[in-house]
Length: 149
Image (cartoon, rainbow, N blue to C red):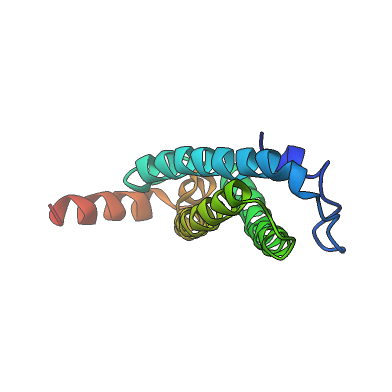
């Protein structure tokens, strides 16, 4: 499942969340684990582009920033949901899963931050940025990059 499907479980994150019963723990676990996989894939894609200026257009980079900024806000909701479940006297196996998910959220936050940082860096290296430059600027940039190696 993706964060988009999570919207069916929670109300708009700018409002009071629709807290879920602990029976939804497997669903939230799937969302968190799946979100990590998706974010790792996005990070890999952005890392490939990092060494290739002008690989993305403005729309793509702005979309990444929008999606992962919203994802960052959802991470706080996941944390609050897990905190609520911890206070609800969970079974031993539920407590173990909550503990695992808390560790996963640390990893998720780190990945999310890396994606947002990299996307911000790529904002100044889009195709539109290249097209806005003069031939002289592009030539000078090319020569300077070759001199660095």
